[in-house]
Amino acid sequence: MSRNESAARGAHSLASAQENHARPLLGLHDYGRLETAAFGQLDILSPMRMRLNRTLRDARVVPTAEIPPNVVTLGSTVRYRIGGGAMERRLLLLERYAAPNGQYVSALTPVGLALLGRLEGETVEAPTFESGTLSIHIERVEHQPEAEARRRSAARPEGPDNNGPEAA
Image (cartoon, rainbow, N blue to C red):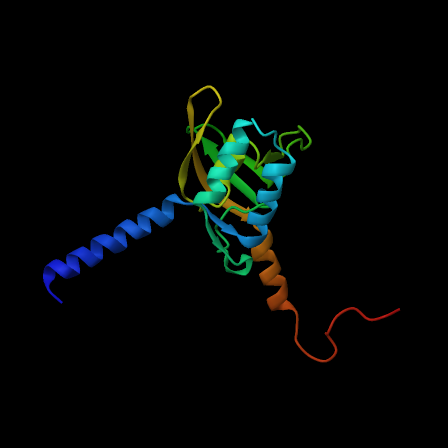
């Protein structure tokens, strides 16, 4: 392979990696729940419906079991900063009207949708409804349901005595 071919292949790999980094990563389960929410919970003229549809269109979708533990998914507890402000810790939910006590952020809001499918350490932008933009830095994914399920599954011993719940 010539040096030019090698450079072209390297540039293509870099562009591909940057493109993949710019796209949210969704598991099939979250994708299905979000697709249902786009039609069931959001009005047809809602700007969030258009944003959610764009996210679904642009996302890289993988089997749920393949989601890395440092990716924000529905049900994840995540720490983030908006515009260099104070650290916030929220549980990412799909519900639009979660209890307004500051513990939750809905994926059907600009901030929640911007977090979804993103990596720990990543900085993302969330367009506001007032034509502004929020810069959100994801500090840490503290808990992710998919990673917890894998951990529990790996900790469970295999064998004839552990094949499911017993009948009463």
